[in-house]
Image 1 (cartoon, helix red, strand yellow):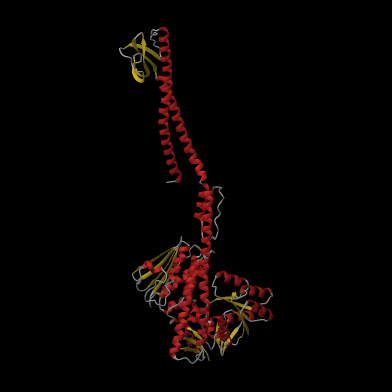
Image 2 (image 1 turned 180 degrees about the vertical axis):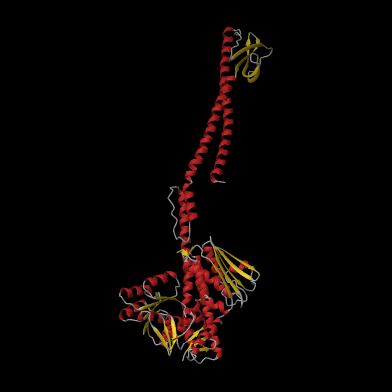
Length: 222
Length: 418
């Protein structure tokens, strides 16, 4: 699947590209307004990451141009301006989501996954990881077609893990994904959730996929 | 004291003093002139008598008319010629009248006579009195007219000034509107309006630039934070770290998040300060509270906190939806963060009052300092110390009353909606 990263900060766009390439995406980078317009006119992308402040013009104009040409690529706005006006303007112009900077790459990846699922499969998509399957429309998970009894947060946690499979995810990223960024301080409570999820997966006959990476966070891997 | 009253006081006092001094001078000058006129009449009479004596070589008859008396008296030595005013008792009315008298000597065949010619001064006095009365009446009339003119005309003259004052009172930085000042055609007010206009547009400009500076600075910080954050996340994927290195990466990662949360909170405070959350709507607080309590139920359970909810249907509160969310979230997370294991939280929403209580150790700072920026409990090093400042700022924005109490180990934050 093809992703276009429109972001003038090279160090950031390269990090994003590196992370996403590990998730089997093909990434292209545009660093200014003109190259962004050029690329979006020539090619179709599954998802476009769009920064609002670009050299040569506004990211919102790129979005306008895109939708005016009837291109339905998924668009995720990544902006340093965490302003409601920009958010509303972006979503009104047809952006699919809005993520303020700075963000966790794992969060960005999860959001991209959600957009692509929505665009490509009309929302009814099954994500698989070995025997685990997640129906993102019905919001249920199953192991070998046997339903897993998960709480809402456990379901979200599993989806987050599988979206970022084989990547180390920090505790902070998990906490902020599940509870928003208001929660700071001691993040030990996450451990309880991980433990419960792990237990439910193992009881359903799966291997213990959730690895604790000492001092950093967790990794969902086989 | 009003400028008009002060001006009137000075004006009327000065006018009165000037008129009084003028009146006294006027009286004496008039008196002098009229006496001179009387003396001239007496001299004419003297000349007539002297002419008579020269022609007839005898004294004329002494005469006694109403307004003029002539009397002769034989004296040993020639008398000196002199004028004089005297008060004499008038027999008829038994009252004093003032007369003007001229005495002069005549010599008839070697005999010296003293002639005195007198004229009543009464008519002169009457005339003076009349003139003075009329003048006084004129002065009083003039003062009254002056007073009225001052009152009405000056009020009208000050109208442009009062307009300017009104505009200044309504001047609001948020509305970004320049002052609309009318041209009064009066130079002083034109100058004032010009100065006020220059000043207000300068203030607006400075305010705008300060505002955009604060926002831009915060935004500019986000990008490097995003770069650092992403690089660290990539670094974390590396598999050959020692334990020590991992700890280092985690610490840096956490601190970067802290810095970015701090930055976002400050940006939020600035935005509230700048009234950038203008749209208000009817917000159902009960719905937001229930939603947020659900969102944090695992965190509450993790600390084994007992949650008591007493949320009744209340009339909607008119405020910005985003800020309402921030307000509730901050109150709830505050109650969770500063709680103890096996503690309790009670959320009560009733009529126009929302209170969130939680168990916890006593504050290490004074209660008044609780809402100040970067004031935090010394035990809570992870906390930013901005949550309650944001709560207070939002409450100030909508004139909600926020209060804090600590009774029997329970901290309570209450918000009273108008």
